Length: 560
Image 1 (cartoon, helix red, strand yellow):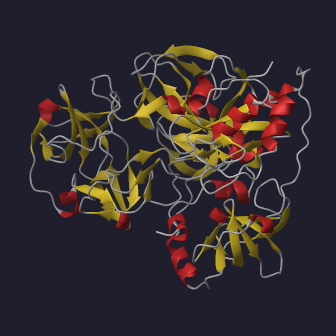
Image 2 (cartoon, rainbow, N blue to C red):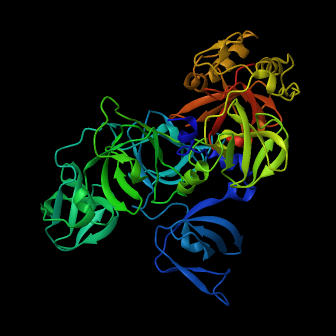
Protein backbone atom coordinates (compact mmCIF):
# COMPACT_ATOMS: atom_id res chain seq x y z
CA UNK A 1 0.00 0.00 0.00
CA UNK A 2 1.40 3.43 -0.94
CA UNK A 3 1.46 6.30 1.49
CA UNK A 4 -1.15 7.99 -0.70
CA UNK A 5 -3.62 5.13 -0.41
CA UNK A 6 -2.89 4.66 3.29
CA UNK A 7 -3.80 8.27 3.93
CA UNK A 8 -7.25 7.61 2.49
CA UNK A 9 -8.00 5.75 5.72
CA UNK A 10 -5.97 7.76 8.24
CA UNK A 11 -6.67 11.46 7.98
CA UNK A 12 -5.70 13.33 11.08
CA UNK A 13 -7.84 15.25 13.40
CA UNK A 14 -4.84 17.45 12.79
CA UNK A 15 -6.63 18.37 9.56
CA UNK A 16 -9.23 20.20 11.56
CA UNK A 17 -6.62 21.73 13.82
CA UNK A 18 -4.57 22.95 10.85
CA UNK A 19 -7.55 24.20 8.89
CA UNK A 20 -9.15 26.22 11.69
CA UNK A 21 -8.48 27.28 15.23
CA UNK A 22 -11.13 26.18 17.77
CA UNK A 23 -13.10 29.00 19.28
CA UNK A 24 -12.92 29.77 22.95
CA UNK A 25 -16.61 28.98 23.25
CA UNK A 26 -16.26 25.48 21.89
CA UNK A 27 -13.33 24.79 24.19
CA UNK A 28 -15.38 25.90 27.18
CA UNK A 29 -18.50 23.82 26.47
CA UNK A 30 -19.68 21.85 29.50
CA UNK A 31 -21.25 18.40 29.31
CA UNK A 32 -24.47 18.07 31.36
CA UNK A 33 -27.17 15.41 31.42
CA UNK A 34 -30.96 15.41 31.41
CA UNK A 35 -32.20 14.14 34.78
CA UNK A 36 -35.95 14.30 34.21
CA UNK A 37 -38.63 12.60 32.13
CA UNK A 38 -40.73 14.57 29.65
CA UNK A 39 -38.22 17.44 29.33
CA UNK A 40 -38.68 19.65 26.26
CA UNK A 41 -36.17 21.37 24.01
CA UNK A 42 -37.40 24.87 23.06
CA UNK A 43 -36.47 27.44 20.43
CA UNK A 44 -35.84 30.11 23.09
CA UNK A 45 -35.32 30.60 26.83
CA UNK A 46 -38.47 30.29 28.93
CA UNK A 47 -41.87 28.68 28.50
CA UNK A 48 -43.73 31.79 27.32
CA UNK A 49 -43.72 32.62 23.61
CA UNK A 50 -41.37 29.74 22.76
CA UNK A 51 -42.00 26.60 20.75
CA UNK A 52 -41.13 23.03 21.62
CA UNK A 53 -38.69 21.81 18.95
CA UNK A 54 -37.79 18.43 20.42
CA UNK A 55 -38.22 15.97 23.25
CA UNK A 56 -35.35 15.09 25.59
CA UNK A 57 -34.87 11.68 27.10
CA UNK A 58 -33.68 11.02 30.61
CA UNK A 59 -29.91 10.51 30.44
CA UNK A 60 -29.37 12.57 27.23
CA UNK A 61 -25.99 14.28 27.11
CA UNK A 62 -26.08 17.98 26.21
CA UNK A 63 -23.33 20.55 25.65
CA UNK A 64 -23.96 24.00 27.12
CA UNK A 65 -23.30 26.73 24.54
CA UNK A 66 -24.97 29.76 26.18
CA UNK A 67 -27.22 30.75 29.08
CA UNK A 68 -30.02 33.17 29.85
CA UNK A 69 -31.09 33.31 33.49
CA UNK A 70 -32.38 29.89 34.51
CA UNK A 71 -32.21 28.53 30.94
CA UNK A 72 -29.34 26.96 29.00
CA UNK A 73 -28.82 26.86 25.24
CA UNK A 74 -27.53 23.36 24.51
CA UNK A 75 -26.47 21.02 21.73
CA UNK A 76 -28.11 17.59 22.13
CA UNK A 77 -25.67 14.81 21.26
CA UNK A 78 -28.38 12.21 20.50
CA UNK A 79 -30.47 14.31 18.09
CA UNK A 80 -27.81 16.85 17.02
CA UNK A 81 -30.27 19.67 17.75
CA UNK A 82 -29.60 23.05 19.33
CA UNK A 83 -32.19 24.60 21.61
CA UNK A 84 -33.01 25.77 25.14
CA UNK A 85 -33.76 23.74 28.26
CA UNK A 86 -34.38 24.71 31.90
CA UNK A 87 -31.20 24.24 33.93
CA UNK A 88 -33.04 22.60 36.82
CA UNK A 89 -33.69 19.64 34.51
CA UNK A 90 -29.96 19.13 34.03
CA UNK A 91 -27.32 17.48 36.20
CA UNK A 92 -23.52 17.26 36.30
CA UNK A 93 -23.81 13.47 36.03
CA UNK A 94 -26.40 11.32 34.26
CA UNK A 95 -28.99 9.30 36.17
CA UNK A 96 -27.54 6.17 37.68
CA UNK A 97 -27.00 3.44 35.12
CA UNK A 98 -26.49 5.77 32.16
CA UNK A 99 -22.96 5.97 30.82
CA UNK A 100 -20.89 6.20 27.69
CA UNK A 101 -18.77 3.19 28.53
CA UNK A 102 -17.51 1.10 31.44
CA UNK A 103 -13.81 1.35 32.28
CA UNK A 104 -11.42 0.18 34.98
CA UNK A 105 -8.62 2.00 36.77
CA UNK A 106 -5.31 0.72 35.37
CA UNK A 107 -3.00 1.35 38.36
CA UNK A 108 -3.02 2.16 42.07
CA UNK A 109 -3.13 5.68 43.46
CA UNK A 110 -4.96 7.32 40.54
CA UNK A 111 -6.25 10.77 41.41
CA UNK A 112 -9.86 11.76 40.75
CA UNK A 113 -10.06 15.54 40.38
CA UNK A 114 -12.65 18.32 40.36
CA UNK A 115 -11.87 19.21 36.73
CA UNK A 116 -10.00 17.95 33.64
CA UNK A 117 -6.33 18.61 34.41
CA UNK A 118 -3.62 18.38 37.04
CA UNK A 119 -4.28 21.97 38.07
CA UNK A 120 -7.67 20.96 39.52
CA UNK A 121 -8.03 19.86 43.13
CA UNK A 122 -7.86 16.18 44.02
CA UNK A 123 -11.17 14.76 45.28
CA UNK A 124 -9.87 11.30 46.11
CA UNK A 125 -7.73 8.37 45.04
CA UNK A 126 -8.80 5.27 43.10
CA UNK A 127 -6.97 1.97 43.15
CA UNK A 128 -6.31 -0.53 40.38
CA UNK A 129 -9.34 -2.47 39.17
CA UNK A 130 -12.00 -0.04 40.41
CA UNK A 131 -14.88 0.10 37.93
CA UNK A 132 -16.01 3.53 36.77
CA UNK A 133 -18.72 4.76 34.41
CA UNK A 134 -17.26 7.07 31.78
CA UNK A 135 -19.88 9.78 31.35
CA UNK A 136 -18.12 12.50 29.34
CA UNK A 137 -14.89 13.29 27.50
CA UNK A 138 -12.73 16.39 28.07
CA UNK A 139 -9.70 16.17 25.75
CA UNK A 140 -7.31 13.65 27.37
CA UNK A 141 -9.42 13.44 30.54
CA UNK A 142 -12.56 11.46 31.34
CA UNK A 143 -15.44 12.51 33.53
CA UNK A 144 -16.31 9.41 35.52
CA UNK A 145 -18.60 8.18 38.27
CA UNK A 146 -17.78 5.36 40.68
CA UNK A 147 -20.94 3.18 40.79
CA UNK A 148 -20.06 1.72 44.18
CA UNK A 149 -20.31 5.05 46.02
CA UNK A 150 -21.61 7.62 43.50
CA UNK A 151 -18.43 9.72 43.66
CA UNK A 152 -17.71 11.57 40.41
CA UNK A 153 -14.86 13.61 39.00
CA UNK A 154 -12.15 13.60 36.34
CA UNK A 155 -9.46 11.00 35.70
CA UNK A 156 -6.66 11.01 33.11
CA UNK A 157 -7.88 8.90 30.19
CA UNK A 158 -4.61 7.01 29.81
CA UNK A 159 -4.98 5.70 33.37
CA UNK A 160 -8.19 3.87 32.45
CA UNK A 161 -8.73 0.73 30.41
CA UNK A 162 -11.89 -0.61 28.83
CA UNK A 163 -13.07 -4.19 28.62
CA UNK A 164 -12.84 -6.59 31.55
CA UNK A 165 -11.13 -5.64 34.78
CA UNK A 166 -8.42 -8.12 34.00
CA UNK A 167 -7.44 -6.03 31.03
CA UNK A 168 -7.54 -9.02 28.72
CA UNK A 169 -7.69 -8.15 25.04
CA UNK A 170 -7.34 -11.69 23.78
CA UNK A 171 -9.14 -12.69 20.62
CA UNK A 172 -9.93 -16.07 22.16
CA UNK A 173 -13.62 -16.30 22.99
CA UNK A 174 -15.77 -18.78 24.88
CA UNK A 175 -17.60 -21.44 22.90
CA UNK A 176 -21.00 -19.93 23.74
CA UNK A 177 -20.19 -16.50 22.28
CA UNK A 178 -22.82 -15.43 19.72
CA UNK A 179 -25.27 -18.22 20.52
CA UNK A 180 -28.91 -17.20 20.61
CA UNK A 181 -31.15 -17.56 23.66
CA UNK A 182 -34.75 -16.56 24.37
CA UNK A 183 -36.14 -14.80 27.42
CA UNK A 184 -38.19 -17.29 29.43
CA UNK A 185 -40.34 -14.88 31.44
CA UNK A 186 -42.27 -11.62 31.21
CA UNK A 187 -40.99 -8.31 32.54
CA UNK A 188 -37.31 -9.32 32.69
CA UNK A 189 -35.02 -6.35 33.31
CA UNK A 190 -32.06 -5.72 31.02
CA UNK A 191 -29.62 -3.98 33.36
CA UNK A 192 -26.56 -1.79 32.97
CA UNK A 193 -24.48 -3.88 35.38
CA UNK A 194 -24.51 -7.52 36.57
CA UNK A 195 -26.28 -6.65 39.82
CA UNK A 196 -29.88 -6.10 40.85
CA UNK A 197 -28.85 -2.51 41.60
CA UNK A 198 -27.96 -1.89 37.95
CA UNK A 199 -30.15 0.69 36.22
CA UNK A 200 -32.81 -1.06 34.04
CA UNK A 201 -32.12 -0.25 30.38
CA UNK A 202 -35.31 -1.91 29.13
CA UNK A 203 -37.85 -4.56 30.04
CA UNK A 204 -37.79 -7.76 27.96
CA UNK A 205 -40.86 -9.85 27.23
CA UNK A 206 -41.11 -13.63 26.98
CA UNK A 207 -39.62 -14.99 23.75
CA UNK A 208 -37.27 -12.05 23.09
CA UNK A 209 -34.15 -13.26 21.27
CA UNK A 210 -30.77 -12.30 22.75
CA UNK A 211 -27.18 -13.25 21.91
CA UNK A 212 -24.62 -14.31 24.51
CA UNK A 213 -21.52 -12.19 24.97
CA UNK A 214 -20.25 -13.01 28.46
CA UNK A 215 -21.25 -15.16 31.44
CA UNK A 216 -20.42 -13.95 34.93
CA UNK A 217 -21.68 -16.00 37.89
CA UNK A 218 -25.49 -15.62 37.88
CA UNK A 219 -25.54 -13.03 35.11
CA UNK A 220 -25.21 -12.96 31.32
CA UNK A 221 -24.15 -10.04 29.16
CA UNK A 222 -26.32 -10.16 26.05
CA UNK A 223 -27.14 -8.29 22.85
CA UNK A 224 -30.89 -8.01 22.39
CA UNK A 225 -32.01 -8.91 18.86
CA UNK A 226 -31.82 -5.56 17.02
CA UNK A 227 -31.57 -3.86 20.40
CA UNK A 228 -29.20 -2.76 23.19
CA UNK A 229 -26.49 -4.57 25.12
CA UNK A 230 -26.95 -5.25 28.83
CA UNK A 231 -27.09 -7.83 31.61
CA UNK A 232 -29.87 -10.27 32.50
CA UNK A 233 -30.21 -12.99 35.11
CA UNK A 234 -29.16 -16.35 33.66
CA UNK A 235 -32.23 -17.91 35.27
CA UNK A 236 -34.42 -16.31 32.58
CA UNK A 237 -32.44 -17.59 29.57
CA UNK A 238 -33.82 -20.50 27.56
CA UNK A 239 -32.45 -22.25 24.45
CA UNK A 240 -32.71 -19.97 21.41
CA UNK A 241 -34.77 -20.49 18.28
CA UNK A 242 -34.13 -19.77 14.59
CA UNK A 243 -33.11 -16.22 13.67
CA UNK A 244 -33.96 -14.59 10.36
CA UNK A 245 -31.99 -12.08 8.28
CA UNK A 246 -28.56 -10.60 8.98
CA UNK A 247 -28.66 -11.67 12.61
CA UNK A 248 -27.78 -15.17 11.47
CA UNK A 249 -24.28 -13.69 11.14
CA UNK A 250 -24.26 -12.52 14.77
CA UNK A 251 -21.12 -13.48 16.64
CA UNK A 252 -19.26 -14.74 13.57
CA UNK A 253 -15.59 -13.70 13.41
CA UNK A 254 -14.31 -11.25 10.83
CA UNK A 255 -10.77 -9.99 10.29
CA UNK A 256 -9.54 -6.48 9.52
CA UNK A 257 -8.21 -6.64 5.96
CA UNK A 258 -6.49 -3.24 5.68
CA UNK A 259 -3.52 -1.76 7.49
CA UNK A 260 -5.63 0.55 9.66
CA UNK A 261 -9.37 0.71 10.29
CA UNK A 262 -11.18 3.04 12.67
CA UNK A 263 -13.72 1.76 15.19
CA UNK A 264 -16.42 4.43 15.56
CA UNK A 265 -19.32 4.85 18.01
CA UNK A 266 -21.88 5.14 15.19
CA UNK A 267 -22.41 4.09 11.55
CA UNK A 268 -21.30 7.38 9.96
CA UNK A 269 -17.88 8.81 9.23
CA UNK A 270 -18.53 11.99 11.25
CA UNK A 271 -18.30 9.95 14.47
CA UNK A 272 -14.85 10.55 15.97
CA UNK A 273 -13.01 7.19 16.20
CA UNK A 274 -12.89 5.29 19.48
CA UNK A 275 -9.90 3.15 18.52
CA UNK A 276 -7.73 2.08 15.61
CA UNK A 277 -7.79 -1.57 14.53
CA UNK A 278 -4.78 -2.88 12.63
CA UNK A 279 -4.63 -5.56 9.95
CA UNK A 280 -5.55 -9.05 11.11
CA UNK A 281 -7.47 -7.95 14.23
CA UNK A 282 -10.40 -10.25 14.99
CA UNK A 283 -13.84 -8.75 15.58
CA UNK A 284 -17.28 -10.33 15.88
CA UNK A 285 -20.32 -9.25 13.88
CA UNK A 286 -23.30 -7.82 15.71
CA UNK A 287 -25.31 -5.92 13.12
CA UNK A 288 -25.08 -4.91 9.44
CA UNK A 289 -26.40 -1.55 8.24
CA UNK A 290 -25.77 -0.50 4.65
CA UNK A 291 -22.01 0.14 4.29
CA UNK A 292 -21.31 -0.40 7.99
CA UNK A 293 -20.91 -3.29 10.40
CA UNK A 294 -21.40 -3.12 14.15
CA UNK A 295 -18.71 -5.29 15.71
CA UNK A 296 -17.51 -6.40 19.12
CA UNK A 297 -13.80 -6.40 19.85
CA UNK A 298 -13.83 -9.31 22.27
CA UNK A 299 -12.98 -8.19 25.80
CA UNK A 300 -13.21 -4.57 24.65
CA UNK A 301 -15.31 -2.04 22.79
CA UNK A 302 -18.40 -2.33 20.62
CA UNK A 303 -18.44 -0.01 17.62
CA UNK A 304 -18.91 0.41 13.88
CA UNK A 305 -16.47 -0.14 10.99
CA UNK A 306 -16.73 0.20 7.23
CA UNK A 307 -17.78 -3.32 6.33
CA UNK A 308 -15.90 -3.54 3.00
CA UNK A 309 -12.65 -3.77 4.94
CA UNK A 310 -13.59 -6.92 6.85
CA UNK A 311 -12.49 -10.36 5.61
CA UNK A 312 -14.11 -13.71 6.32
CA UNK A 313 -10.80 -15.58 6.37
CA UNK A 314 -8.15 -15.23 9.04
CA UNK A 315 -4.85 -13.59 8.06
CA UNK A 316 -2.06 -15.99 8.96
CA UNK A 317 0.56 -14.78 11.46
CA UNK A 318 -0.98 -11.27 11.64
CA UNK A 319 -2.80 -11.02 14.99
CA UNK A 320 -3.70 -7.33 14.72
CA UNK A 321 -3.98 -4.78 17.51
CA UNK A 322 -6.34 -2.27 19.04
CA UNK A 323 -4.62 1.12 19.25
CA UNK A 324 -5.81 4.34 20.88
CA UNK A 325 -6.46 7.30 18.60
CA UNK A 326 -4.74 10.62 19.21
CA UNK A 327 -4.95 14.15 17.88
CA UNK A 328 -3.27 13.14 14.61
CA UNK A 329 -6.08 10.75 13.76
CA UNK A 330 -9.79 10.58 13.33
CA UNK A 331 -10.70 12.38 10.14
CA UNK A 332 -13.66 11.56 7.97
CA UNK A 333 -13.52 8.67 5.53
CA UNK A 334 -14.61 10.07 2.17
CA UNK A 335 -15.39 7.38 -0.40
CA UNK A 336 -15.85 10.04 -3.11
CA UNK A 337 -12.24 11.07 -2.68
CA UNK A 338 -11.03 7.97 -4.48
CA UNK A 339 -12.84 9.06 -7.62
CA UNK A 340 -11.33 12.54 -7.45
CA UNK A 341 -7.84 11.14 -6.94
CA UNK A 342 -8.23 8.77 -9.90
CA UNK A 343 -8.73 11.76 -12.22
CA UNK A 344 -5.52 13.52 -11.09
CA UNK A 345 -2.23 13.60 -12.95
CA UNK A 346 0.68 11.93 -11.22
CA UNK A 347 2.01 15.35 -10.13
CA UNK A 348 -1.26 16.61 -8.67
CA UNK A 349 -3.09 16.51 -5.35
CA UNK A 350 -6.59 17.42 -4.16
CA UNK A 351 -7.28 19.45 -0.99
CA UNK A 352 -9.32 17.59 1.63
CA UNK A 353 -10.60 20.44 3.85
CA UNK A 354 -11.75 23.99 3.21
CA UNK A 355 -9.73 26.66 4.99
CA UNK A 356 -6.47 24.69 4.74
CA UNK A 357 -3.33 26.78 4.89
CA UNK A 358 -0.46 26.93 2.40
CA UNK A 359 2.65 28.12 4.23
CA UNK A 360 6.05 29.48 3.28
CA UNK A 361 7.77 26.34 4.56
CA UNK A 362 7.15 22.83 5.90
CA UNK A 363 5.76 23.58 9.36
CA UNK A 364 3.21 25.56 11.33
CA UNK A 365 5.95 28.00 12.38
CA UNK A 366 6.12 29.34 8.80
CA UNK A 367 3.80 32.16 7.69
CA UNK A 368 0.55 31.50 5.80
CA UNK A 369 0.82 32.57 2.14
CA UNK A 370 -2.56 31.30 0.88
CA UNK A 371 -5.74 29.59 2.04
CA UNK A 372 -7.26 26.88 -0.17
CA UNK A 373 -10.66 25.23 -0.42
CA UNK A 374 -11.80 21.62 -0.35
CA UNK A 375 -11.41 19.90 -3.76
CA UNK A 376 -8.89 22.50 -5.02
CA UNK A 377 -6.35 20.77 -7.28
CA UNK A 378 -2.68 21.56 -6.58
CA UNK A 379 0.49 20.81 -8.50
CA UNK A 380 2.75 18.76 -6.22
CA UNK A 381 6.54 19.17 -6.55
CA UNK A 382 7.68 16.91 -3.72
CA UNK A 383 7.63 16.17 0.00
CA UNK A 384 9.76 17.01 3.04
CA UNK A 385 9.12 16.46 6.74
CA UNK A 386 5.49 15.44 6.18
CA UNK A 387 4.72 18.53 4.06
CA UNK A 388 4.12 18.88 0.32
CA UNK A 389 5.60 21.65 -1.80
CA UNK A 390 2.71 22.71 -4.05
CA UNK A 391 1.57 25.35 -6.53
CA UNK A 392 -2.02 26.58 -6.52
CA UNK A 393 -3.93 27.48 -9.71
CA UNK A 394 -3.46 31.14 -8.72
CA UNK A 395 0.29 30.66 -9.19
CA UNK A 396 1.09 30.76 -5.45
CA UNK A 397 3.75 28.23 -4.43
CA UNK A 398 4.15 27.05 -0.85
CA UNK A 399 3.80 24.10 1.50
CA UNK A 400 0.75 22.19 2.74
CA UNK A 401 0.61 19.41 5.35
CA UNK A 402 0.40 16.06 3.56
CA UNK A 403 -2.66 14.99 5.58
CA UNK A 404 -4.58 17.91 4.06
CA UNK A 405 -3.83 16.97 0.46
CA UNK A 406 -4.42 13.58 -1.18
CA UNK A 407 -2.07 12.68 -4.03
CA UNK A 408 -2.39 10.08 -6.77
CA UNK A 409 1.19 8.83 -6.34
CA UNK A 410 3.81 9.17 -3.63
CA UNK A 411 5.59 12.53 -4.15
CA UNK A 412 9.39 12.48 -4.46
CA UNK A 413 11.47 13.43 -1.44
CA UNK A 414 12.94 16.91 -1.85
CA UNK A 415 16.62 17.56 -1.06
CA UNK A 416 17.50 19.86 1.84
CA UNK A 417 18.57 22.55 -0.65
CA UNK A 418 14.92 23.00 -1.67
CA UNK A 419 13.62 23.32 1.89
CA UNK A 420 13.57 26.87 3.29
CA UNK A 421 15.34 27.48 6.57
CA UNK A 422 13.11 27.46 9.60
CA UNK A 423 12.21 30.88 11.04
CA UNK A 424 14.34 31.79 14.01
CA UNK A 425 12.70 31.71 17.42
CA UNK A 426 14.02 34.11 20.02
CA UNK A 427 14.19 32.59 23.50
CA UNK A 428 13.86 34.79 26.56
CA UNK A 429 14.94 33.77 30.04
CA UNK A 430 12.05 32.63 32.19
CA UNK A 431 10.98 34.01 35.54
CA UNK A 432 12.90 32.61 38.48
CA UNK A 433 15.67 31.23 36.27
CA UNK A 434 18.66 33.49 37.15
CA UNK A 435 21.19 31.13 35.58
CA UNK A 436 19.21 30.90 32.34
CA UNK A 437 19.32 27.11 32.33
CA UNK A 438 15.82 26.78 30.87
CA UNK A 439 16.71 29.32 28.17
CA UNK A 440 19.84 27.34 27.32
CA UNK A 441 17.92 24.03 27.16
CA UNK A 442 15.41 25.61 24.76
CA UNK A 443 18.19 27.09 22.57
CA UNK A 444 20.02 23.76 22.40
CA UNK A 445 16.83 21.96 21.33
CA UNK A 446 16.04 24.67 18.77
CA UNK A 447 19.49 24.30 17.24
CA UNK A 448 18.48 20.76 16.19
CA UNK A 449 15.61 21.90 13.96
CA UNK A 450 15.87 20.06 10.65
CA UNK A 451 17.65 17.00 12.07
CA UNK A 452 15.95 13.71 11.12
CA UNK A 453 13.68 11.72 13.39
CA UNK A 454 15.47 8.48 14.26
CA UNK A 455 13.92 6.01 16.68
CA UNK A 456 15.92 5.72 19.94
CA UNK A 457 18.51 8.30 18.75
CA UNK A 458 19.87 11.14 20.91
CA UNK A 459 22.81 12.40 18.85
CA UNK A 460 22.95 15.55 16.65
CA UNK A 461 25.14 13.63 14.18
CA UNK A 462 22.44 10.95 13.75
CA UNK A 463 19.10 12.41 14.74
CA UNK A 464 16.58 12.28 17.58
CA UNK A 465 13.38 10.71 18.71
CA UNK A 466 11.07 12.83 20.86
CA UNK A 467 12.41 11.89 24.29
CA UNK A 468 15.95 11.71 22.89
CA UNK A 469 15.83 15.42 22.00
CA UNK A 470 14.71 16.43 25.50
CA UNK A 471 17.21 14.00 27.06
CA UNK A 472 20.13 15.39 24.99
CA UNK A 473 19.28 19.09 25.52
CA UNK A 474 19.03 18.64 29.28
CA UNK A 475 22.22 16.60 29.34
CA UNK A 476 24.19 19.45 27.80
CA UNK A 477 23.54 21.58 30.89
CA UNK A 478 24.25 18.74 33.33
CA UNK A 479 20.71 17.53 33.98
CA UNK A 480 20.28 13.76 33.76
CA UNK A 481 16.80 13.38 32.33
CA UNK A 482 15.09 9.99 32.17
CA UNK A 483 15.21 8.52 28.66
CA UNK A 484 11.61 7.49 27.85
CA UNK A 485 8.38 9.47 27.90
CA UNK A 486 6.58 7.58 30.68
CA UNK A 487 9.59 7.91 32.99
CA UNK A 488 9.99 11.63 32.24
CA UNK A 489 6.36 12.17 33.22
CA UNK A 490 6.62 10.10 36.39
CA UNK A 491 10.09 11.30 37.52
CA UNK A 492 9.61 12.88 40.98
CA UNK A 493 12.46 15.32 40.25
CA UNK A 494 10.27 17.06 37.71
CA UNK A 495 7.94 19.76 39.02
CA UNK A 496 4.44 19.85 37.50
CA UNK A 497 3.89 23.13 35.65
CA UNK A 498 0.48 24.60 34.79
CA UNK A 499 0.10 25.59 31.15
CA UNK A 500 -0.22 29.26 31.99
CA UNK A 501 3.13 29.10 33.85
CA UNK A 502 5.20 27.44 31.13
CA UNK A 503 8.74 28.76 30.63
CA UNK A 504 11.48 27.96 28.09
CA UNK A 505 13.14 24.63 28.89
CA UNK A 506 10.05 22.95 30.34
CA UNK A 507 9.27 19.48 29.00
CA UNK A 508 5.76 19.48 27.53
CA UNK A 509 4.03 16.08 27.50
CA UNK A 510 1.33 14.54 25.33
CA UNK A 511 -0.82 11.44 25.81
CA UNK A 512 -2.44 8.89 23.51
CA UNK A 513 -0.72 10.12 20.33
CA UNK A 514 0.02 6.65 19.02
CA UNK A 515 -0.45 4.50 22.11
CA UNK A 516 -2.16 4.78 25.48
CA UNK A 517 -0.38 6.87 28.11
CA UNK A 518 2.20 9.65 27.92
CA UNK A 519 3.67 8.92 24.51
CA UNK A 520 5.28 12.12 23.21
CA UNK A 521 7.34 15.00 24.63
CA UNK A 522 8.90 18.25 23.44
CA UNK A 523 10.78 21.25 24.83
CA UNK A 524 8.89 24.50 25.37
CA UNK A 525 10.59 27.53 23.78
CA UNK A 526 8.18 30.34 24.69
CA UNK A 527 5.33 32.24 23.03
CA UNK A 528 3.13 29.16 22.97
CA UNK A 529 5.60 27.12 20.89
CA UNK A 530 7.64 23.98 21.46
CA UNK A 531 10.33 22.09 19.57
CA UNK A 532 10.05 18.34 19.09
CA UNK A 533 10.87 15.34 16.91
CA UNK A 534 7.38 14.50 15.55
CA UNK A 535 7.78 11.03 14.09
CA UNK A 536 9.01 8.73 11.35
CA UNK A 537 9.83 10.45 8.05
CA UNK A 538 9.86 13.90 9.64
CA UNK A 539 12.47 16.24 11.09
CA UNK A 540 12.82 18.19 14.32
CA UNK A 541 10.58 21.25 14.08
CA UNK A 542 8.77 23.96 16.04
CA UNK A 543 4.99 23.73 16.47
CA UNK A 544 2.34 25.65 18.35
CA UNK A 545 1.16 24.05 21.57
CA UNK A 546 -2.40 25.06 20.67
CA UNK A 547 -2.28 22.74 17.66
CA UNK A 548 -1.73 19.80 20.03
CA UNK A 549 -4.43 20.82 22.49
CA UNK A 550 -6.31 17.54 22.35
CA UNK A 551 -3.30 15.45 23.35
CA UNK A 552 -1.47 17.88 25.67
CA UNK A 553 -1.53 16.48 29.21
CA UNK A 554 0.90 18.63 31.21
CA UNK A 555 4.49 19.72 31.67
CA UNK A 556 7.51 19.03 33.88
CA UNK A 557 10.39 21.36 34.89
CA UNK A 558 13.76 19.81 35.75
CA UNK A 559 16.03 22.86 36.03
CA UNK A 560 16.20 25.00 39.17
